[in-house]
Picture 1 (cartoon, rainbow, N blue to C red):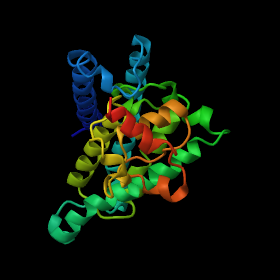
Picture 2: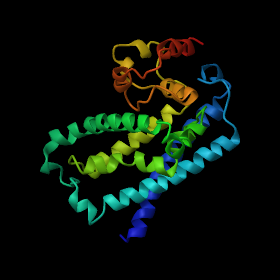
Picture 3: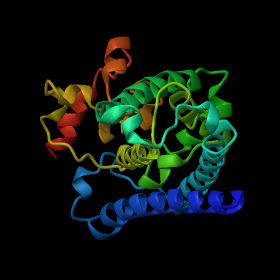
Picture 4: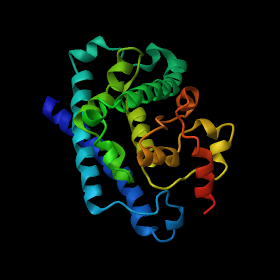
Length: 250
């Protein structure tokens, strides 16, 4: 397949995922069920139309950058120097399965530390300020990054494929889950139950409420999938569990 056609098909796939996941979440929570679940909204106010437009615009730009980087890395000649492989039997089924949790553990660490770096005052205006224009984010904010931040975010792709053996199935699943969790993180509503934030298991899992606090206060709660880095480094907000339970009790 010619390079442009492959780029276009990849761009279409990622775009469809974004508009399908964010669109369904937005339609359900912000339109159909809006009045019924209003009391449970993390921030009671709603973004304005211009906020939705900005989030979609920057997300589309991010998707284009993600697609371009993926095409450069996962096609010859660059892909020939990575650990990307096709035949599952080459590394066995045990590795094929183990690679999935490994990708998310590595990505969570990568996200936490790059996220904290982008909150460094000299760097923040150039990389991360655009994303934080969504003080009260909606699902459309999932990929609303400045182009420089988009390059940082997609940096997980070369990090993975140049260090561990992965198939196309691994990558498609990984980026699909990543997008879904990003939509959830910016949803504006919490989906986990009231007891989750203090549960021995749930206390290590990131929540939509946790990330919403990050957008609202600009400091603390830097994790993506998990909360262990925030807890280990003392960057989780002190009021997280109390405020989470207060929201759930509405």
